[in-house]
Length: 271
Image (tube, rainbow, N blue to C red; front, side, top):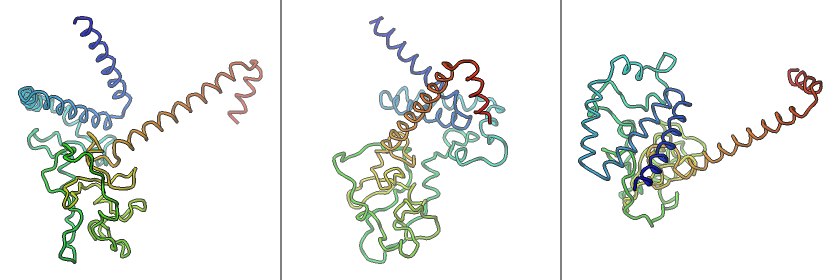
């Protein structure tokens, strides 16, 4: 048992050190955003295992809110480089409020949503925006085998795009990206409920289509589903490794050149 515990501790130390190194390599805003994400994951896991320990974490949050240094709090809230906060900083929690009063990103997404117009026909529209309160991510899929209906079966106003309006809300107030198939940038961040099945869906900018909300994983309000994010990370890692190999090959070739040719090559590179 002690050997297993030691091995588990070593594995955990390796993982935490990797995470720490990643956080150190990020800019302050990105580091803070990922730290909040890690905290949410930890809270979810503790809550699923023990209600008592989950309550204890709530009490710890309240205590930390009371004991946090005001100067540190101001530094966390201040935009990087001065001026007005960027898009990412606007998505971060407002630490100037008590934990119970902070507006989550999920709530901000709901607050900026504009209700869809009433359909001209008496029948119900295929999809309705989910009403608050919204969780930060999908909490479960009651019918995991069910597939998302075809896009043409989900749009509320199929002919709206011919008039420059959104096919989901029939409004022209918000811009419609070319790759969004007529869905405006207000509706592509909304969580939709399919009638009458109750399936929860969200627009994925990677798939360029609606996907089940649960497919977005812990990042419930990400612009891309979990599969697209994984593919993007894989492409990035592959390209990074390719660039590093090319650099190593060039450096290795230069090392094999005679000193005079190496100097000549260096001068040509500068020119």
